[in-house]
Image (cartoon, rainbow, N blue to C red; front, side, top):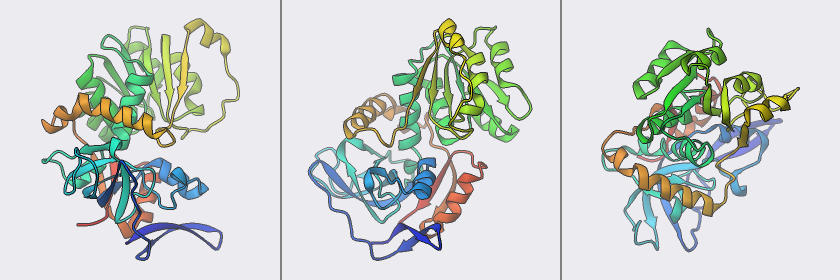
Length: 326
C-alpha cells in the first residue's frame, strides 16, 4: 500500500511517500479501514522531529475517515463509512482502528470533513468537560480560538452549555470565524492585553476555565485571568515549556487547579470511553448540521511536507487535511 514514511537523510528529517508498505493486520475488536482522508495535528509535527511515534507506529497520523473493509463488529460492518482515532498509521492507504474509537460518519459529511472531527472535538470535549468541569453559568477562555481544537471547543461550549465564551486569536479574520461559531468576547492578542479584556468582560470575576495551547509565555497572564477556583487546562506549549518563576501564593489564594493533558498517549480504554460519551451527546448535532467540522485546506498525500509547513506557519483556520484515496 502507499504510505508516508519518516526518514532521516543527511541529518534532515523528511517524510517520503512509498508504495511498498505492507497493509496492517487487525486483531480482535479492531477494524481495517481503507483511508479516504487523514488530518494533520501538531503532535504529528512533534513526532516527525523527535521520532517519538504514536504507539511505536512507524507511520504518522492519529485520525482518519474511510470505509471499513475488515470487521468483526456488528456496529461497524464492512462498507461502513467511519471516522475516528488511530494509534498512528493514518498517513496511509489502510489503517487499523479500535472498534471503540470508531464513529459512523454522517451521510451529509464528506470524508475530508470526517477526518477533521475526531482529534479536535474529542480533545475539546475532554478538556472542557472531563478536565475543566465547565458548567452553564461559568466563563471559559479559549486561546488559539481559530485552531482546530479552539473552533471545536467554541462550538461545544455554545451548544452544550450557556457559558460565556471568550477567545483569543491573531487577526480580525480569525476572530470573525470564532464569532460566527458562537464566541461571545473576541480578543486580538496582538493588539490587546487579553488578561485585561477577560477581567473587563467578566466584571472582574475572571475565567472559570482556560484552555491554553501556549504554556510558559502566558503563565502570569493566565493566572491573572483566572477566577477563584478556576481551572487551567494546558494542552500545548507553543510559547515554551518552562516557567522561570511560579507564584505559588496566587495558586493558593485563588484555589487554582492546573491540569496538563495530551490525548494521543491516553489508553485505548480511555479513548473508547471518551468517544462513546462524546458521540452520545453530539451525534444528532452533527447530523443536523449544528456542529460543524472546519476544514481550512486539503493537500494530497504526496504533499504532506507542504501540509506540515503550512501548519507550522500558524496561518490556518481549522483543520488541515490529507486526501489519501478518492
